[in-house]
Structures are given as C-alpha cells and as structure tokens.
Length: 99
Image 1 (cartoon, rainbow, N blue to C red):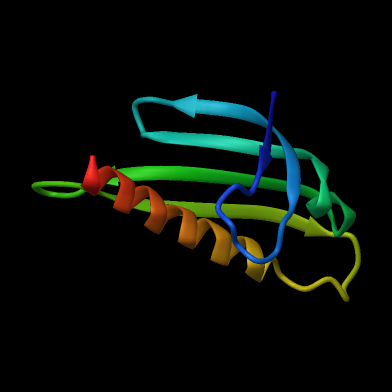
Image 2 (cartoon, helix red, strand yellow):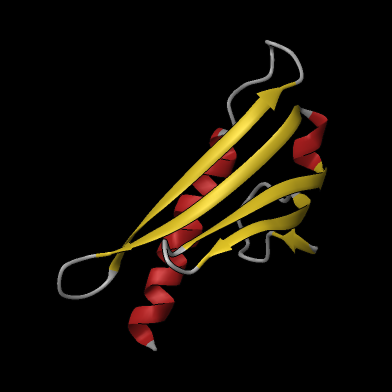
C-alpha cells in the first residue's frame, strides 16, 4: 500500500492513499485502486491504470485509464485528475529526456 501526495506544485493539492492492484510486466502496465483521500469524498470507487506501449524506434506512448463510480449524479467527471496525470506524464518525459 502506498500513499501519494502531489509534490509538483500544481494548484489544487489533493491526497490519496492507493493500493497497487496489479503489475503486468508483459503488458507494461500497473493498476491502482484508490482507498482513501479527497477523491473518495466524491466517488464510491476509483481505479487508475497506467500502460506504456513502446513506439517504433524510441520512446513509448502512455495510456491512462480511470474507472470510477460517482456517489451521485451531481459529481463532475475528474477533469483535474486528468489534467494532473497529463502534466505528470509531461514532467516524466522531460526528466527522462534530460537524464
């Protein structure tokens, strides 16, 4: 079990405790289940999967999948989390290129 906190200085600070549900080396994927934190105030369940597909030549394409069930219909889709993982992916790419 691991806890995650947004250390990247993005505007909207959130905290989540997550559990790694599966690591699939063959398919280059990892799946998480959110157990506690800000997200769980709005969602009954929340799962995130990260999959890396190697590109021809160099690099990879990253796919994030989010599966969630809202506590009620007035809850909006998790746009800020989508923005967060997009920025996180860009930060990771920058770090890997500079390494």
